[in-house]
Length: 125
Image (tube, rainbow, N blue to C red; front, side, top):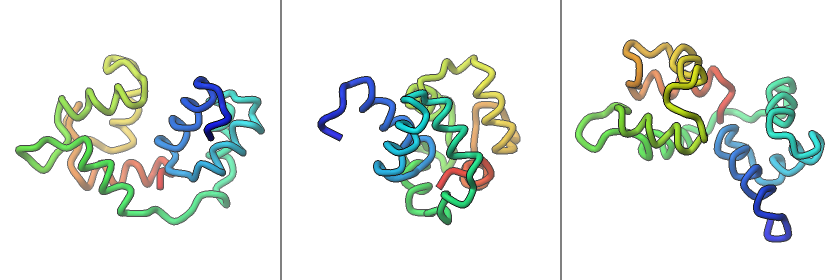
């Protein structure tokens, strides 16, 4: 990945962070979509056979990154960090859709179960 320009490296990292795929697959999907991130996501989600079985270790690492240090939930600070990582404004409708997929009982709060099941529903592994 060191031969790529900064913009392409950033897209590879974003693709990997959101989909949980390998760098090799991220590069293939992005090249196939002419480096269009949305096109690469469409490719990824339209071909379920290329997705692997969810890796609970990876989901746990993500959960630990965002969870509140004082409670076993992702709270406002963790949501803010998640939005920052996804490069999405917290008020963007994308966060409402993510909350819906996670079946969050409370907006801007995710339990461990909501987070894991939501990401798995979205095809994240």
